[in-house]
Amino acid sequence: MNRTVALLLSLSIFAWAPSALMAAPAPPAKAKPAPIVKLKDGLDVEAVKKNELLDKRFLDLYERATQKLMQRDINGSYTLIQAAQRLRPNSARLFALYGTMYKLNKQYKQAIRFFQLAANGFKEKTESYEKFTALYNVAFCYELQQKRPAAIAAWQIYLTLASKYPQQKAGIQFAQSRIKDLSSVKIGPSKIIIKTKPKSR
Image 1 (cartoon, helix red, strand yellow):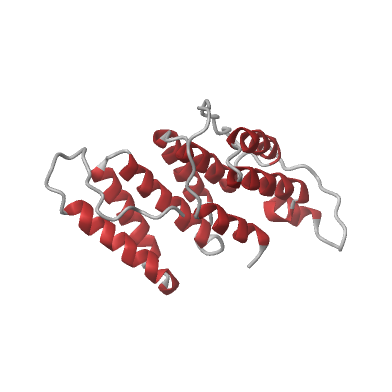
Image 2 (spheres, rainbow, N blue to C red; image 1 turned 90 degrees about the horizontal axis):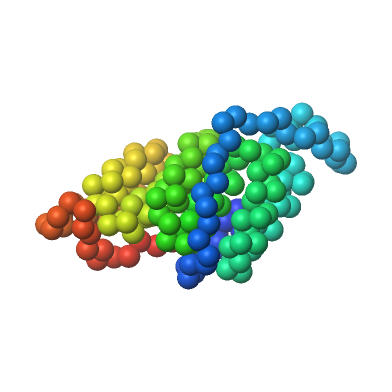
């Protein structure tokens, strides 16, 4: 397990109190070219421009931003994410971090927006864990908003994708249980009784 995935796993198990509210950053219309990075060890600069995880400057900012979130320093993380976004304006990983910050601040509408951007940006074959985590959080945030139909639809999207991967058995079972519980609620369409609280990822 590389250190980036380890950070994502560590971040996913924390639930923190909200900090100061933030204005939603607007995603850039189109990506700017990544800066040329001088590397050692014979790494290809062109490969770095395409793969943000080979960009040492970006990766340092990303990891520091993640650590700030783990320390409940949302404002510090926000500053670092903005710096990283100047290097990689359309990074799905940064969109996921924005989503996490807004979820922690109980700003679920903004969180959903950025988790959806992240899910769309992650590649299914090579970044499936990150994609599943973003989709999971979309459904989770809809539940926290008490939006039952939207939550069911989001879990269905998660389930459809996860069903292609046998290693996602636990996630598939959990999504099925959430759909079952939410579908059995007999009260108004905008209200949810959460019998089993979704786990943060």
